[in-house]
View 1 (cartoon, rainbow, N blue to C red):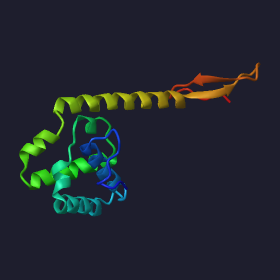
View 2 (cartoon, helix red, strand yellow; view 1 turned 90 degrees about the vertical axis):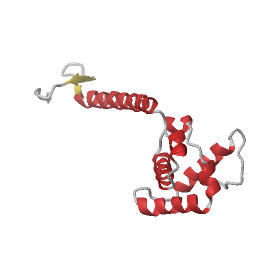
View 3 (spheres, one colour; view 1 turned 45 degrees about the vertical axis):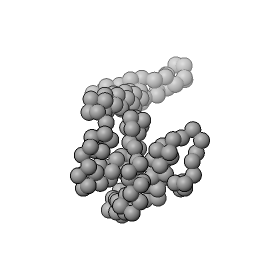
View 4 (cartoon, rainbow, N blue to C red; view 1 turned 135 degrees about the horizontal axis):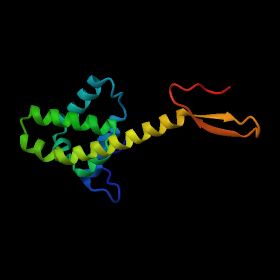
Length: 146
């Protein structure tokens, strides 16, 4: 885990803090949210400078991971509990920008699903005369040749 007092070259203090918090979250099983959430909330409450200096800028939202998503959720919960609407508004991404990111990722997922389905429907068969393998695409109602 990174030491919050260490500064890595080419990273701003805000980026370093973000990376430190994400490294901290890798220590937890994020499916057991209670323990990880309590630990992160404890950090935010006992080390107010961490909460105050944490910035979730545009780059943060571009490539979400489970740790980033969890950090954002707990950060939002802490802002809401503190009734810090200004900070919350400044932190959350613009809805249309996030919608475009979701659409882009969804399109990539659908391309992968289509590719996988196409690959599953292409069954290698052995040609009767040549002995060479060839791919044959079958539909759901066709039967595989023996």
